Every structure is written in C-alpha cells, then in structure tokens.
Length: 464
View 1: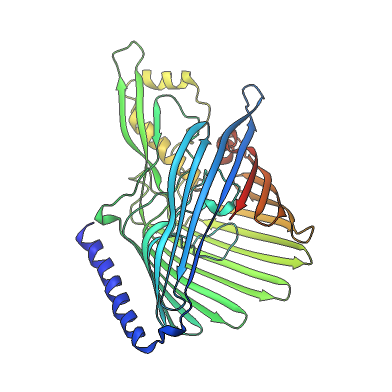
View 2: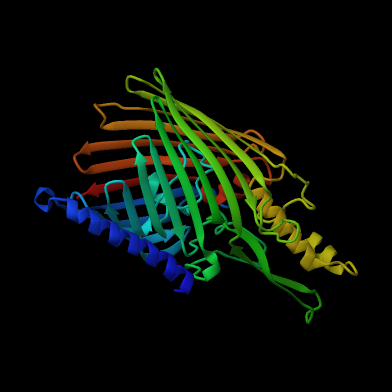
C-alpha cells in the first residue's frame, strides 16, 4: 500500500475513532441490543442452449454454489457484515472452482454519521434497467446465476455518510484500487491470430485512486440526488498491447494481443424518485467525460450525455415497469472503419491486406479495436434511444412469480428478452426457471453475443 492510500485510510480510521469515543461518553451501553446472525444458502443449476453448428442441446454452464453470510451488530455503534461464496462447476464450457469474498466490511455509527471500510457493493442511481450515475461498483456481465443481483461485484473502499438534517444526506466514497468489471467479450469468437485478455486481479498502483461525492435530498413526495465521480470507470476499454507479423513462412502470419485497460473519467449525475397516485416515477441523467482522447487511445470512449426516465405501476398482484433511456455524443465523429471483431472475417480479405505494399496492418488492428470499443459502448451513432419493459405478477399467495423483462435499443436494434418463473413451494426453498434471448442486426453487439449468451436456465436454492 502506498503513502497516499495509507494517509487516506488513516484519516478515515482517525475520524472514526475520535467520533466513536465522543459517542461513547454519551451512550448507555446497557441499552444496546446486539445481534448475531450466521446464515447463507446452497444453490445448484445449469444453463443450456442449442449449438448452432449441429443444433444439439448442450450445457455450457453449470454451477454448485455455497454462500455463508455473517451479520453482527451491537445495535448502536457498529455493524459487521461478510458474504463469502464458493463456486464449483463450469462457465462457457470452462471448469470453475473459486472462492469469492463478495462483501466484507465494518460500519461505525455516530449520531449524525456512518463510516464503512472494507469490501462493499455501493449502487448509485434509481432507475431499473440503466444507471448512468453508477460508477462505484464493477459488474460481471457474463454472470451465470439465477439471482440477478449476483451481477454486482464489491469494491475495496472507504465510505463516509453525514446526516446534517433529516432531509439531507452527504456521502463520500474513496476507492484506492481498481477492480475491473467482467466484460461481455470473453467467449466471443475472434480470429485465431488475436488473443483477448480481461483484468483478473486488483490494480494497486497509487494512481488508481477514485472517489465519489453524493448529496441526497428527501422532500415530501420526492427524493433526489446530485453526484460526482472522479476516477476510473469500472467498465474498462479494450487496448491493442502487442502486434507482430511472422514473415518466416511463405504467407505472413499476424499476431495481436488485446487487453482490457482502465481509463479515467469525470461523471456528473442527477437522479430522482417520486410518486403520483399508483405510479412511481424515476429518472437519471449523467455527463461522462474521459480524461484521455479516443483519437489517440483506442480503448477510451467518447464524451457522452445519458438520460433515463421510467414509471412503475402496481395494481393488485400485477406490477409493470417501463423505462426509456437516451444518449447523445456531443463531439461525435464517425468511426474510421466498420467493426469486424466478433464477426465472420473473410480470410481472403486478410491475405489481400497483408499482400498490399505499405499496408499498415498494426494500424488497421488498432482502428478495429477502437471501432469495437465504440460498438460495445454504443457510440457508433450520435444519438441512441432504448426502451425497457418488465411485467410480473404474484400467484398462489406470492409462492409463484412469473415475469418477462425485455430491452430494445431502437438505434442498434439489439433485443434482449428474459422470461422467468420463480416458485417457492416451501419456506427456504426457491426454484427458478427461465431463459435469455439475445438478438440484433448483423454486426451488432447482441448479434455477436447471441451465440454464447442465449440460454435456458434452471436453479434450485435452499436458504439456511
């Protein structure tokens, strides 16, 4: 740990210790009610799909999960929470055996403040499907789990909350290290001469510090927040890190490495939530501006402005959620090339390019990498418009919950449909069945991902 990180954490610990000491003088410890809870779950399931090559059913992902959670509090001054997971199975036909400390943090409480330090998931924003203000916690976009919340990943951080009045909360978060999201790229079918790598561990360089500030206002009938993030976006870009051409053979053979690489941004956000009769109304807006330029760094996205608005409607056992989201690229420039990564590339084209005198193949790969990043970040057009709809209901007194969630990007024509049925036949037992269907026009992100993301899934979970 470097000196800057030590100083930051020392300040938080010092403030926590002094404030706790002051509170101790005013508290009657005999009135505290401590709680200790040890609980968790055992879960098993599989993801199945039909192979396009032979149209036969196979199971590329199966899992056996064990989770142990600890929740301890003295009722007044502190709280400790830990969530340890172990998974054994396969993901996209690759064997998996790993432990994951999803969360483990301690919170010290004062009369008007809270301080948390450790591995924690913090989610900003109030929208249902898209959260442009959320930049604090990474996500696993290829998560194979029947619980949707498992997509969220924890971050090592220090968090301070101050409550100056009943209607206001001020929050500050410091993240000394960088933990990367798992991008929707790993199983993509790419040319044999290209290797692609994700970030597998924490990046602990002292320059990786990120921080966020947020103010919440709670008025009658409406809650709203203003947030600021300065640091590394949890969704990294893809960079060309190595390129070579083997000229020993008669036919030159190119070779390239692509690596996920973090980039630094500023993100100014606003969100709100209100009610109007039976309707719940939510909205978010954010301006994101990278420190580096996409013109000289192919892994860096363009500056963008996002907005989201949505409504919830409940009637009896039914709940319908609709959301619209949009995006605008202020300084939009068309991509220099059409993205080819992830599509069927004609070998004859590669041969023609390699045989062209003076052709800069490394520059071509770098341009292709930049074009893929723009495809992945939905920045090939100046304007984007998307919609999301979820319909769900409770049957059998809440024991059976069928739902359908659909997302459609009107600009790229990417479509995702997720039907699901959750059945709770007994206390502590949950059976989940559903599927994911990705579709898009040729060359779009979902057209590339549908080969490995389309699936049927079923899982059984026992809580204890």
